[in-house]
Image (cartoon, rainbow over all chains, first blue to last red; front, side, top):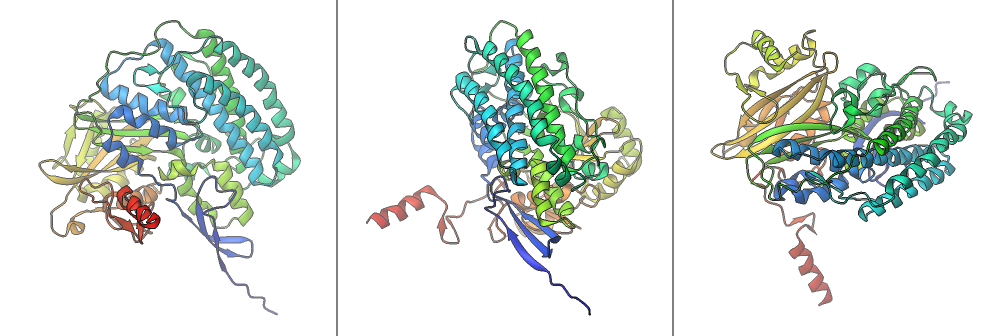
Length: 371
Length: 179
């Protein structure tokens, strides 16, 4: 007897626990297998690029916090560097080190959330409570630094808004001493967990070519075996003076570029961030933390494209100025956007449950996709 | 490869006519090419082993309403193999009548698949059509949204499907309700 099956259209989201914000997928499924996957984005579109055109340069800084609220410092930093390069503003060395310090700290907590929610999305709820506990500590540190726990608005053109409070570096190294062994513990109970591994190895493999074609960036690109990190290859700020390794995906655990490799890259990057942070603490110079020379900011006509390495990969700001106090155009290119665009291609052929793993492993954050 | 030698190679591919090289500005230099040459150049820039631009970093639209009403599509290209970059620009006139006939440019989504979504976003925000795109729709805004918000002369509608979009409108509704 011939068995016939029917396809069904399934609407996943916009409010789904695994979509990390408000995302919607229209799936055509045959049983558990996805035949067609269509991401529908834009639910968190706030028109940041239009807002940027209507505000003076400095006033847009708080909006960059909202660009990616899990890595607000990195977004602040990217925007600040762009405008500084366009307007020729110098940054004192102490400010550069403070910036790298907060950026790496923010990378750690962003990856913590990524790792925790990844485990939660595929059914292990406990790891999230562990990672969020560590994140809480860093949030306290940031609160001490700038008064905010999530949207910091801390970096200014020419430096940072407040100097490090007294004893901050000691408290930070205390945290690092606590955190480094914790990573080993995560590996024991999540990364090397047999169920977790069986669930993810070989799932949703992104080949080298696909990663290039879809312009994937950051950890997702490196997981596919491409050795590229802006911090090392096009150093900005003081990354050139710091020593760190760039973790690259290997086929050690199964297949290069699968969900499991993407998970590991983030664990390894946290280790490297700890290394960078320790160097920042050791090298922190004395001196001014803000260059106050240019209070009224005007940018000469011209255009500039600056990219920095945020936790979700390359964060590019394309700034066009026609003179004056406002940008003519500010285009924001984010890592999650390109990560999201590959889902359409990779989604078909996956199981519905594996789609959840794929989105979690790409570490997509909806506000960064929609802007 | 330096930008200058990339430029020389490009001249070999599409000829020198109508190319405008802009290098007297603070950022990186860019090349303005006529839109008819875009597709041919894009294929060669990816395929030529000496250029090998394998990644499209960024694709943006720009609207200028200075002396001339024109739109630009800007392609930031990067080659991971050779670690060099190049910026291409295409300029489109936007006449007052039937602008959508003129705001048309070839899609490069077949060459760099990353362009598929970026082009949809540019269409959504600027109303530029990309010819030869597989799945050409709005990306961020709802399909029945009117206008393209990043155009400089965009007028925000007062309401979308009966939902007020401006604050005055909302306050008016609240005042009516309270009564």
